[in-house]
Amino acid sequence: MAFAPRAFFLLCGIIGLTGVWSLPVHEEEDGCCPKGWTQLDKRCFIYKEEARSFLDAESICNLLGGNLVSILSSLENVVVLEVIKLTADPVPDTWIGLHQALETENFLWTDGSEFGFDNFAQTLSAGDCAEIESDDELWDLDDCTDENPYVCARDIKCPH
Image 1 (cartoon, rainbow, N blue to C red):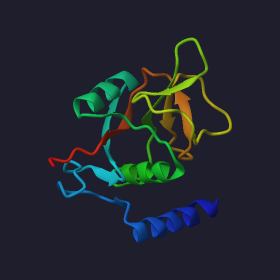
Image 2 (cartoon, rainbow, N blue to C red; image 1 turned 135 degrees about the vertical axis):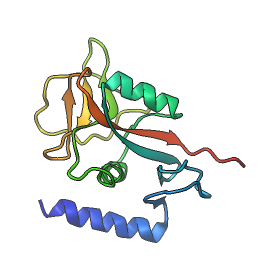
Image 3 (tube, one colour; image 1 turned 180 degrees about the vertical axis):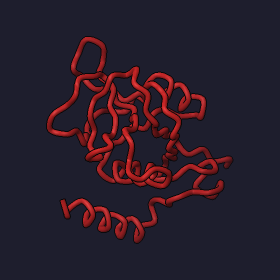
């Protein structure tokens, strides 16, 4: 269990040296994320604490110019957890953009990203939509109609 905090601090040190992300973004900067969003590389992230169903959360993310967050690496997973913790600590059950395709066991991201990295717990609950679990901060499945807070992501949009 001591590995997780050490790994996080190591990642923070590496990221700080390379300058690839900023946390939090409070106003529009050269990185081109809207006010209140956090930037990592060429993507912006925001935590929305009002509980919604998976489909409603995806719709709101679409209105904000993005999708429910796709998490494509362990670094992005750490950043998403920190974005949540800026508002809510401990982390509540929180929707991410991963779901099972209809009548298959294949996973799809709502933004169309390729599914490769995962942070699933060893045993999964019944359901078709993925969430970050409050008790262990690992991914699990839940009924898509349940209501949870959620994280949206979008590509940076620069005026130049």
